[in-house]
Amino acid sequence: MPYTIYVLHSVEGYTYVGMTNDLERRLRENKSGQSSYTRKSTGWDLVYKEEVPTREEARRREKYFKSHAGTEWLQRRGIILL
Image (cartoon, rainbow, N blue to C red; front, side, top):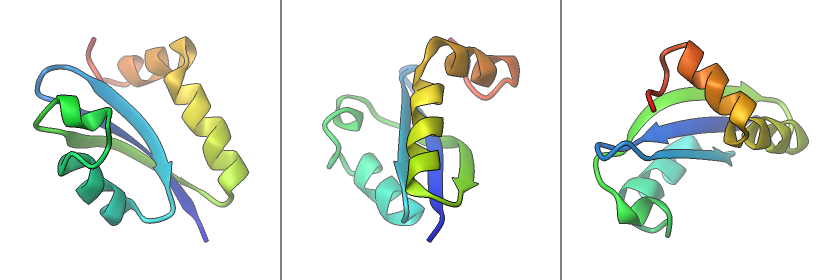
């Protein structure tokens, strides 16, 4: 089963990076306040998603996007603005 790495951006300017094997379910959870991090903000929009074949690859990509280099990669492509 493929995994999806996804990036959400809020109206207030927060960024959330996550991974899941069910993107629609996770988006509902994030937007409804079931996630402790996304609960503190509103207006979350999906700004990027990427599918990978394994959980291990998804963890590696999630960790990358949470790093300084990954954040810069997203900024250079205009996906997030900080």
